[in-house]
Image 1 (spheres, rainbow over the protein chains, first blue to last red):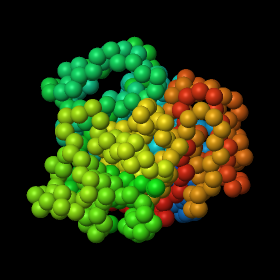
Image 2: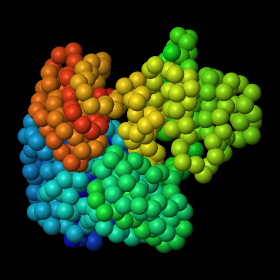
Image 3: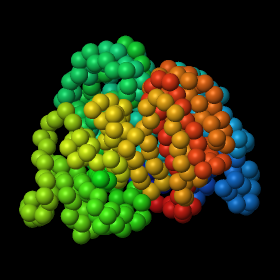
Length: 227
Length: 227
């Protein structure tokens, strides 16, 4: 079963067709889950999530009543807690619902302390063991966390660039079958190799120890939009 | 001398008064520098940067002519290079111009491979030695990179939250004088402690080995803005 999580990050970072993505996924039997303001965003799109996690402080009373009456599995978090609502949501989907694929939206932009939680939580157990199933997606990026070993990353339509970054001490990092190659790279601290390009259908990333982040990236459609 | 760098990231991430910030800084004798589309953004705001770095591929011919005729120090980068334009800009400001304070805007959002370069480059020399002088700023966040030792981080007006994250293996991490405390924390991989709060004028962060990121954060003004 596929899971889709919508977190409370800014809607401007969503892929443009997110409402359609959620609707189609629901039709195909995916579980739709939300945390924080993500639950409200779902309801505003006319989509009832199957699972909602949060303290729901930001919802008005009638909105909370709607969540409680419509959502099958509502899990209440405590404002002072060790895990964030997004982490509770990821654990519920990957451990309890045992989804075998998880797409996460609304995880980027806005408050960057929240953003880094959403990335770094997948470096640690219990969530690290599931990281191969997870994609964090926004309108210009798809983020994957990789554990040691050999990974073939397939080209994604519309994403012309990719970046490879260590997120820890790393040993023996290789980038193969790409425009810019890297061989047996070691570093104590994270380093991002950005703006690399696919030359075929996939690139090969391998490393022996540490954690690595792979980001599919694309330039924005509009050139810019001055405030 | 203070330096201000404007990179090519999305303008939606700027603090709302960035044009005023640049103007006032210039009046006070700061050096204004730009990379990539940042140079174009400066010109559109009627601000002539003192230093511009880039391959300028994204500028039209008359825009490039304007940059060449108006900007005192134009540095051309090669599209295929080891350092990104933003890294070349940071090095020029910190090493050549020897600014003793550097504020970086336009470094967040958009392509996240670019974003992570802008953060992680300060974990390594030559730039790491200057990291105490540097702030990466957007409309909801101020990011600082910390080296081992004891740091007192002063409260910043309008930023109610902060996050502390290791960006490497870390030993002996402490958070003191804050709402949520942390004592002698060790971890092999990065972990973000988010949504902490000031209780006085400053918090104290200390650690023995590794690299740490401190993020001042605030919630956005508008509740949300559905697409």
